[in-house]
Length: 314
Image (tube, rainbow, N blue to C red; front, top):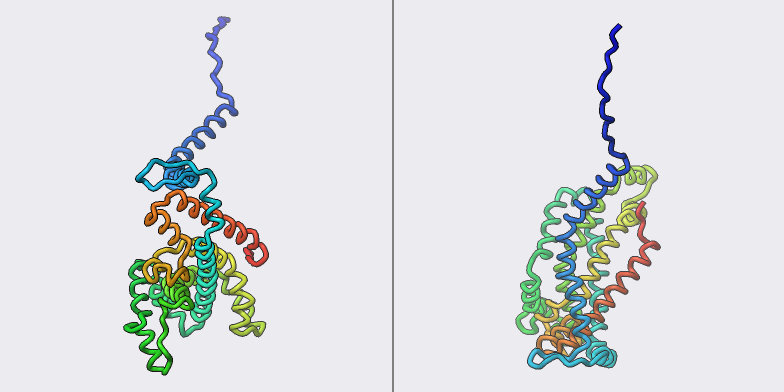
């Protein structure tokens, strides 16, 4: 019998499973980081960079015309004793509370109306109407409202006169100037809350309302026990976003009142603008900006901290 001897075959080359898995993970991570590079670059250029520059600038006195002079914490010490800055922070906080509160209340009332059958068919129309001011230029709206509030030519005082009420110096009175800005701002921004609240209501399961109706709950009870609790995450989002926006208000007081009369309607950003670009005190303006940044961070942290008490995610 002939015996045939086969040549020795080379053993197959194997790659360890662990090495392959590590390679795949590295490739996936590398791909993710490549896509994140534009985000990191944008954050560094437009957020972290300006913040660090403002922090450094706050330690100097600089008016562009002369070289920067290092003053340490003098700008922050001056800020603590500046009554005008204190008044601007007070005005801003009053504006925030009034604007955010009125926006939420009015938007919730409108959403409650939209739940009625006679209004449901027109929900798309009202959604467009109320959202239109949100996308309209703030400067244009401020100019229109400044004319409406005009003491002699304004249509508001005209109708007050027809009702036998004395005309009001809306923009020249320390009592009404800030409220005039609040009214104009509510008219512009309430549509944002309304649209997102309406979207939130449409995501609430309908069977909850059907079960409540079977149990005998009326419309108000359904809104109070179902709609409002289920809508609290959306309300929380609107409150946080609205607060951050309102703390940075500038256009309306700048156009309508210039912060007057006196300091009655001067806000923090308006004060920052005056110090930085009118008085050319960029160091002091940077200190005010950092103080505002700190207030925004603290207020936002408090909102998130307290959300567990009233926001229901299930």
